[in-house]
Length: 308
Length: 245
Image 1 (cartoon, chains in turn yellow, cyan):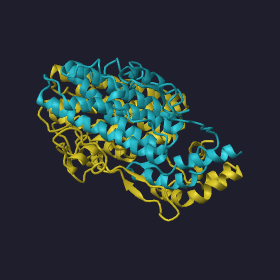
Image 2 (tube, one colour):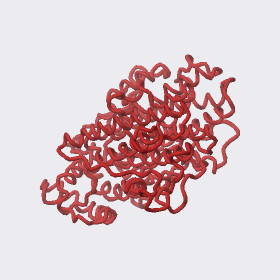
Image 3 (cartoon, helix red, strand yellow):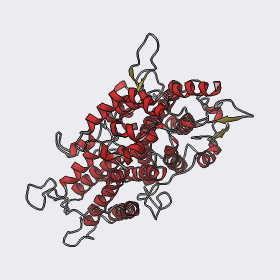
Image 4 (tube, helix red, strand yellow):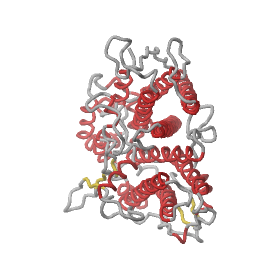
């Protein structure tokens, strides 16, 4: 039996048993403490409902994942629709013909996924959330200083926010996939949506580079920052510059298990060609070579900047 | 019965806490859940009687279960890394300086992915890794490395294939740590794919040939279909029929 799969099912079925307000990190902490002792007992007893109440569980259900996946596409669809002048009362961003064609592609693909995820939600018996009101300048309809005052008139600003949303969408979806791993169809839909976000982000970055910005098609420590440190938006890039991917060693009778980083910069033969990269140069490539997931809250906080 | 016991210890060895990506939430989750469930996870139903790396008549089996998926990814990353290493060593005459620089960077990313899987398999499933695909095992005869167009067309094939491969194989991974790392990699492969496509034809980063025009989702392919598409570039025959099973 696939035990984690079972756990995930229990988590879905018995969400009421978890104290509703329990902070997720606390829940995870309990998982760490209780896991070893609890799980074998659970398995041997074969009693499913009882341990579910005590079993630590994640708070992301399938519906949570679907709603976030839909929100990401709804949000980008609205953002691009406004830029294309498709929304009444909002002027189109003055893009070149080539840029406009690309934004149309982006908008249409987001609209397709809005339809897909909406259908999955309603087919499952849930209702769709009410559409929020959007203000992509970040001024909350003029009630506070705008974050991007020239969004509707400056293609550079528009593309900067587009990059932020696409990079964020990809990271958020990446963070959701593991919660639906026991649902083959939904899992695959999430990862396939995520790689589309990555393609979109790559193209937006190419568009920005063509306009003179210092940015690669992938997230790199060498990119010029597009957010201000300490802001909600900056969280989108937090952790992306990881230069270390770690694993846990096998414990032996005499040596405890330890967390060890993959030795990209020393022993692995990744230094193809000449001149050889410096160790710092290799680590920059390591950071680029892996996109990092983030929690749903980072995305919803970002979305909150642009809704009122 | 003894067979089951054997399997249990085998799988337990394989399912140890693993390559945890940097995400701390996941790390704690695995630290707890995996420590508790490791001995139990997978041991019940997976009759994993694979003899992964024994080539039968020139065929290399990628293996079954999670290690099969890892070997599958490792084979594809080896192919990509070898291709870009050659591109870097003998860049096409009509590449711009920027494009040369781009391919040097992609070469490094793919080499990192390759080495990551090598390290992962060797640690988690000792003895089950597929052989290294050396120059003699690969067949790049159809690629004209001196021509930009030929290199870009091949790069597009490999990157799109890689994205579809990860998108289609993720569901076969039972271990969440692998699942996350596969996602971390496919995301970068998709960025490569979009960039190469835009080099060939600006704006083709996500056209209908690769994005489903009904669902708006990227392509996903089953392991056997991916290996069939990659096989012309690999002399040794790869058997993906048991991957994830």
